[in-house]
Image (tube, rainbow, N blue to C red; front, side):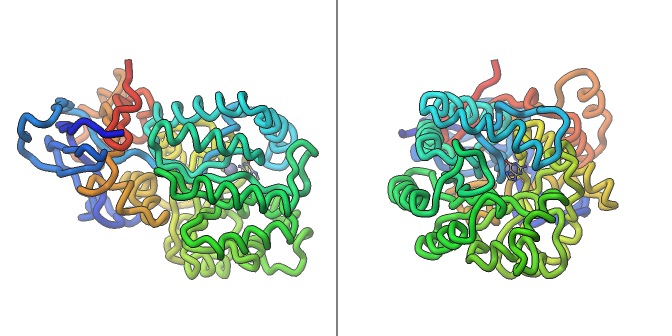
Amino acid sequence: MTSVKTAVRADLLDFTADPGLADLNSPAVRFRPDHWLLTDERGRIAAVQPHEPGDDFLKLDRRGQLLLPGFIDTHVHCPQIDVIASWGAQLLDWLETYTFPAEARHAEPEYAAAGAKLFLDALLSHGTTSAVVFPTVHRSATEALFDASTQRGMRIIAGKVLMDRHAPDNLRDDVDGSEMECRALIKDWHGRGRIAYALTPRFAATSSDAQLAMAGRLLAEHPGVYMQTHVAENPAEVRWIAELFPSSRSYLDVYASHGLLTERSVLAHGIWLDDLDRALLHDSGAQIAHCPSSNLFLGSGLFGWREAREAGFNVSLGSDVGGGTSLSMHRTMADGYKVQALAGTKLSAWALLHAATRAAAVALRLPHEIGFLEPGCAADFCVWDWAVGSVAERRHSVARELHEKVFAWITLGDERNLVESWVGGLRRYQRI
Ligand code: GUN
Ligand code: ZN
């Protein structure tokens, strides 16, 4: 689809480099107040400039509003909208009681297709334009997600969930069948439009050695394909993995020994890691999708962001809905701040915002496409109100400098602040 050349006038904010964890005055912050963002017919960013462009652009005046790259949610489950905010369980009970029954319903193609559309529209209405997504074990549900992503032009990385054991009958696959389906899905979808395929073993408990090895083989055969899974989320889960894989040094080592740790691997949580695991993450170039809302809601634990930084591995942010309780990256960032406050680390607004934009783009090896307001990148961006409601408006009005304003925006804001979401130069969400 061709886009109309558009110019949006607003306060532009993004990052040119990593701002660190706690530097409030980092030079990596690029704030361009009252600038024009120009998009071209291919849906890319053409330029950013302080002066008004010519009349060949459709011009939109968003003065006094913030314009940011669309958020990147690096860990979220499409079918789990149906179980968000389910009461009273930690991870393993929560999977059995709520999640597996809900995912089984996605065997029905029409149900899955409706769910995929609702999910993607919900992402867009929360300011998230790119995501790394778990659908279900079903091939048809995975295709429904890819179809709906294509219709919206979104950068989505996803793949059929692999689970050949320790799951209900109606959610289990097997090694040969899942290999055939993955091969077909990679052939049909990987690199088509803005879709990338991710081999998706749910977690080490639900895949046999043979299935993990199959995923490792496919990953090696298909450079450019991603891998996503969960690791070291919950203490009972970690003990179970140690029983299931007695010869592995650690939970993370199960994935490493099956060839599943690459620079395109996205592992959710990583709370219960040791120094050797952290070194392995650094050496492999993999990333941890830190999911603070989920970690608090399911009582999983506190992620060691400072330790991650010291080890030098990539950290991005995931909502982990439905373990997480909101698709909002505002809520995710605000919970990330609180988790680090408990862990004794003060995160800057820049560290949080960077993790939800540029850090994720870099770790996904997509900095030429998403996470920046840079000519050549896809025109995936969102316009936000600085404040909604009397309390946030008051707080914003008394803030003296940019970090204070942005930190209040993260902490007090949410999807109600979102004015519009643009994907590939087309407006895909507008507040009414
Ligand atoms: N570990 C295995 N499956 C899941 C899931 O669906 N959500 C979370 N948070 N952890 C998991
Ligand atoms: Zn998850």
